[in-house]
Image (cartoon, rainbow, N blue to C red; front, side, top):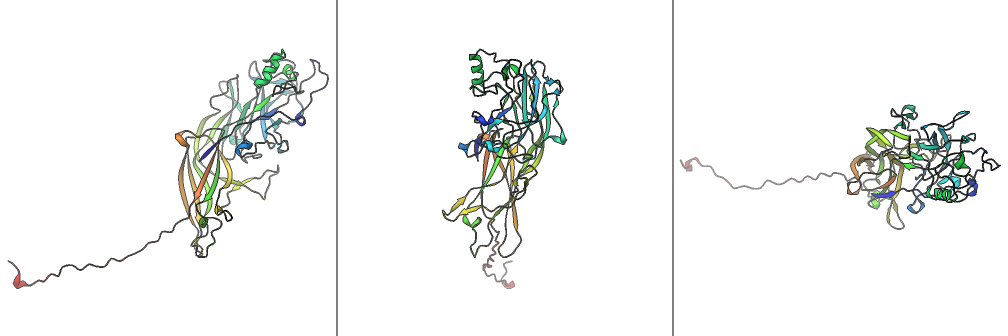
Length: 412
C-alpha cells in the first residue's frame, strides 16, 4: 500500500484569464468581484462522479479543473453577516463555475452570472466549498447555534469529494502591497480590488481579488490489481486449464463512516481544527467505475456498477500488468478500513461460477490514521481459486496375533 501526498501547485494566470475591470482608474470606479481558484488536487467532473483534480504531474496525475460547480459566501468582516448591496445578498451560497480542462491548469478565474461589485466601503471575507450531491436530504448550509459557523449536513457514498477554502492573500501579494505603501489589511474590498497586485505579487489589472486554495477533507483510495501468474490472468488459455482466469467482481469497504456535518464558513481568521464534525453511521461503500458508453446532460461519464475485470498479463515481456480498477473512493478518514474483495473463477467444463470473498483490514504503516487530502494506492495480487480435492486412502487391516482358545487348557 503506497501513500501519495496530494498537494497543490500554483502558477500565475495567463493573459487569457484576465478580466479587465471598468475603465477610468479613479477611486470611485466600481470594482468587480472576481474569483480565482487553485489548489484542488485530484481528474473528474460534476455530480457524484468522484474526486476534483488529481495528483501533481510528477506524481503521475493531471491536476486540472474541469468546470466543477462551487458555492461561495461573502461576509462583512465586521460582524460575520452576509454581505449586501442595493439588490440584496451579494454571494449567499451562490454557485460559481471553475475553469475547464481547456485551461490546462489548476488555477484560473471562476465564472458566475451577472457581474457583482464590491460596496464602496467595508472589508469582506469569502468562503467557497464543493459538496457535490452529498447534502443530506437536500439540506443547505445553516448558521450554527453559536452563530460563528455555517454547517452543512452531508451523507457520503464514496463518489463525492468535499473541498473547502477561505480566500486569503499570498505572502508575495501582501509583501508587494506593503512595499507599494498600500494598507494590506483592507482586503477584500473595493480598495484592495483597485490595487493592481495579483496573487503572485506581480502586476495584475484585476487587482487584489479573492483567491481560493481548496483543501480536500477526505481520504482517497485508488485500487489496482495484478495477477500472481499468467494462469490467473486474461491470458489463461491453456487447453488443460481447469478454470478460466480469475475475475474481480466487486470491492467493498464495509465500515465506512458516511454522515457528518461539514463546516463551510466560519467567523474570524482561524480555520476549524476539524472541518467534519459529528461523524456518525457505519455503512458499506462499493467501488464503482465510469460508464464509457453513456454521458449525462453535462457531458460527464456517470458512475455505474463495477464490470468484472480479469488481471492482465504482458505476453511480450511475460510479466504481470498492474491495472487500475474502478473510480477512486473518497472516504472520511479513519484509523482502518475493513475491505472485502469478491473474486470468482468459472470451470472450463461448464460448471457454475465459483465466487469467494476475501475480507481484509487495510492499515496504514505504523498504525497511523488515513489522512485527509492523501491518496492511497491499494494493489491486489490475485491468486487463483484452488479446488479442494479430497483423496481417500483405505488403510488395510493389519494382522494381529493368533489366539487359540481350548477349554481343557484354561488355567483355572
